[in-house]
Amino acid sequence: MKRNNWTREELLVAFNLYCKIPFSRINYKQPEIINLASKIGRTPSAVAWKLVNFASFDPSLQKRGVKGASNSSKLDKEIFYQFYENWDEMLFESELLLTQYEETTIEKKYDSILIDLSDKKGEVKIREVKIRVNQNLFRQLILSIYQKKCAISGIDISEMLIAGHILPWAEYENERLNPENGICLSSIYDKAFEKGFIGIDENYKILISSELKGNIKKEYYQPFFGRFEGKTINLPDRFLPSKEFLRKHLESKNFK
Image (cartoon, rainbow, N blue to C red):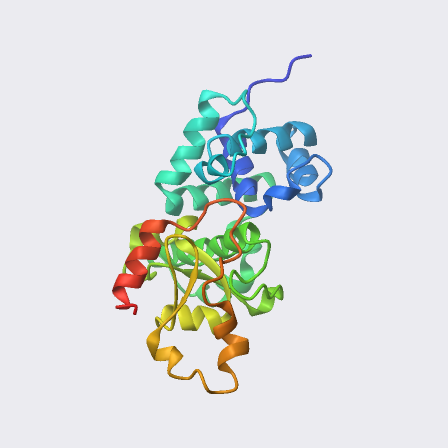
């Protein structure tokens, strides 16, 4: 019997998974795909194929010659670009839907990061819940596309990794959850990038500021900074860092 067409709700939670799972793991044998398939009443193969469909619209994959599937639907494309145009709303909406399929709630699923909000009410609580959940989703997304490795050092200890922003979170509200504004860095490099001691150019090469080079004779300089100068960062498997955002970051830090 022919299966019904995918609904918008099913596609939203499928794209939610597309954001959380490394591209190399998109296949019907992966536990995450099997789990989602059981929740929405699809086969693991159908879910895996749908994720590949989404990949066909991904410009960063297209640039690498990865075309994805060729039989995607009009609705697949609409969902992809709805996320691209409004990450803040779409990530949260898809996560809300996912909790319904999981027969739980946002509050229960994210109780560890929402526990101190129990006394808050109304719009204040709704806004804070959304911010915290979206920050958590952004971290999941960024660590996933960078294969849980620091883009500079390759450190792969999740607890030491930060889902950082190229353009500051506080100053660029519309880009807060845009994965092209994200970069996975271990804490020392995240802080160095934030403060302008290191930068990344439009060719994804690592730059060292003249101020940091003032420490070139110190014992820590070469192993922690100098050896990375001019090297290409470890690129994500999707959602390449925006070259425009990288340029703005260098300009904002008066990088020399």
